[in-house]
Length: 308
Length: 308
Image (cartoon, rainbow over the protein chains, first blue to last red):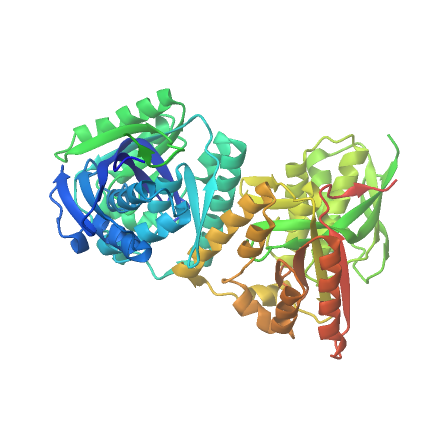
């Protein structure tokens, strides 16, 4: 076993329209790169951060916090250095903190010859996520670590379900570079929801799970609606309604807020449609002063990947 | 094609713990028998009702109302007589009115050489259900007509999804013979539900759909919880908590209110466990003055059956 590993820790989309706090899927074309290195000196040390300005103190860095939680639990006879090549902008709504928190524990687990399973890795990564969002959520971590579509059945005990991924499903994303803090985005949510909307939402979740099992793209389309969260959160994202309307016209199966935003995702059948959807997104924001970035990605069914 | 058909229109369980208003499954060991007969005289006539005292006026009888809705839409060059051999007690919470409403339209459709598909039959049966419950719900009708487990994705447009049924799944039911009107049982429900409970509920619905697809009995067990409706409705059913606790001890995967009650259902892996569960239910109610009936049934994946 090598003493050093380089990994790709992908961006992820949480909630997936109808599945607030429980559903997520994994992207392929954007993610952080990280190098995890075994050292003789004990402890966890972050030795390099490129891309974005993030804290080097282990306890202040999400990758450090998750690594430390796992390290203290396993108490191995070595230490680890972590290098972070950050590609996912923090606060983008596509699982930036999750990617860091997951990457460190995944890499350490590989270097220690995999003492932990994916569920256990998810649990340690959640400790890092807590630092970023003040909540131990797995809805971005699970799709990153397991790959594909995931359903977090419960957090305590942690139970992650990996759902099938239809082969022809593509995601398109736009990241408007405005800042929405997860905490703000949570504060805008109601404590209670109308029962009739909750019923429609769980009908959609059940339908989406069935649609993923049966590769029923029409049903995926029918299920990708969010009556509970989107009406509140979309007001934080300029031009959300225009984007959504235009990408549906361009052929997307569905479109909704990615995680707590501001990124917006769409799902499409086939890469060609996904690229048309990207153009439609681009067109809306090109008319504004807001900087933005778009991505097209196959659903990543593998999750975190070893690069070298 | 014969001029007369005899059918078995099964009882059904709506809601299935986590899926209030959308999930349902079909029973095999209890149901109404109905005879539908083509006549030269036009119109719909109910000519016999045995078992329970129900109205003979077509417009006052759920089987008559659904039959009439279909009859008026198709305008066939004949009429129909309906005989109802009612076995499912009205108000039991196992789809008594649905069975009648579905049986008449199913039988007519057979005698007319199947001009309508199952979704269309469901829509007409819902007209009869409306007479009984003042709401056009399909959560009992769909499992009766399609068989197995069904998810009513939406009512308008009506979209029914048939979910896979694990082969070793058995239902046990107890029907305490007390009266709860559907309207009362609906009035007790809150207009709003806490978002955190709604999230747990849609995690459960998604998990149950996945579990049915993968025959994962442990996950079925994990998913069969109702945080939203049961806490309100169970107060209408004497000894509900005792029944639930005892049948889980007896090995049931889960236990919840059937439809709007008062029947209680449990699901088990294997007939042997389902029979133990029946004994546990029986034991609780045998100590009371309340009359009751218990049933053990395989999940009926066929739905309404032609007897002759």
